[in-house]
Image 1: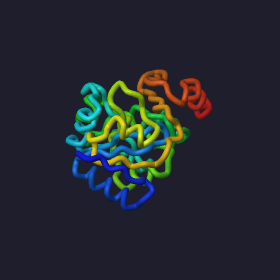
Image 2: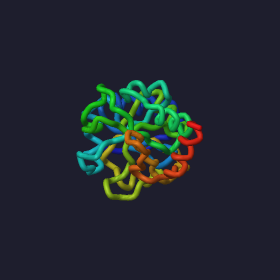
Image 3: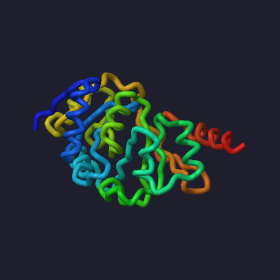
Image 4: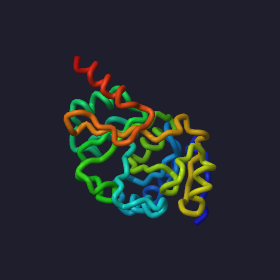
Length: 209
């Protein structure tokens, strides 16, 4: 397989990416944190390719990126009060929120009753996501290797393994998102990222006061 690298800022590139995704294949693209490797969220075949290409352990769930809040109902069964507060305050942004999984989400995305969801804060990524709909997205690197902040970094790891990399320059963040679970009495940070637990707790406290 020959990996193409095209500018994400060209409409033809986005149309080509959508075609690839609809055919059950993968596209790497920039987000506000790091480059992501994505498949259509409801296409189990495509999602399974993410595990294969990355060498990712099958038991690790893959988060979903959406382009707008309206897409949330497609991937989450319900959204609690705490989750709504955090989504309103931190989205678009580097916070992945664990939510009850919608029945339409295939087991390839997660075998759990929950799924991680976020809206990235990057115009080019949002344009792609609003064109395609929800995408299952993992960092665009081989499992265990460094996350990539440039298209060149993705190419060095995944050349010949995926059909397309959308080049959007250097990602503004460089650190994977914070993952928070609000399904227990107190929010639990599953993965530390740009947003701290202290910020999350402060946001919830202020909203409820």
